[in-house]
Amino acid sequence: MAVGANLSIAGSSPPIPLAIDVIAAGCAVASFGTFFSMPWRLLPFPIAVGMLAHAARWAVISVAGGSAPAGALVACTLVGILTTPVADRRHLPFAALAFSAVVSLMPGFFLFNAATGLVELLSIGPSAPPALLTGIVASGTTAFLIVMAMTFGLILPRMLYERFLPSV
Image (cartoon, rainbow, N blue to C red; front, side, top):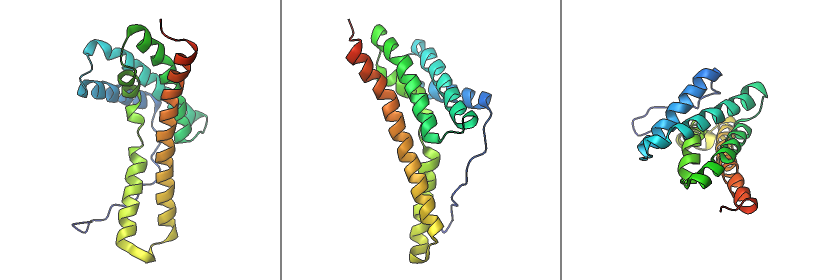
């Protein structure tokens, strides 16, 4: 906006093959864990869980025809279920294991679309088309629902585990 450039709101992204999605997820998990100084000996577990979670998300969206928030909920619930007992038994930080496995699910695409739409709305002003506002609301709502699905998917298994299977 400062230099007069226009960022257009992106449409839906093209479908991604399962193998590429899973490999990219593994790289993201390894990068996130390394960036936040997770010991290298701990990285294989969240990498494997993150890759499995992305495969589950891919299946929900591509095979079952589910939404991005539904895919995030399934993926994060799976991660919560798998990482909770391991973190508890091995006395590892749950947040480091679980969040590093799902950090690549953060809805950057939808947040960028919403922000781009808001900047465009600001530059156009009152004569903005209604479709622009609809797009902003849709992207923002999708991003919010993905973050909420991630939150519940990660935390609910942990809370249930602590409630019904307290650590020794």
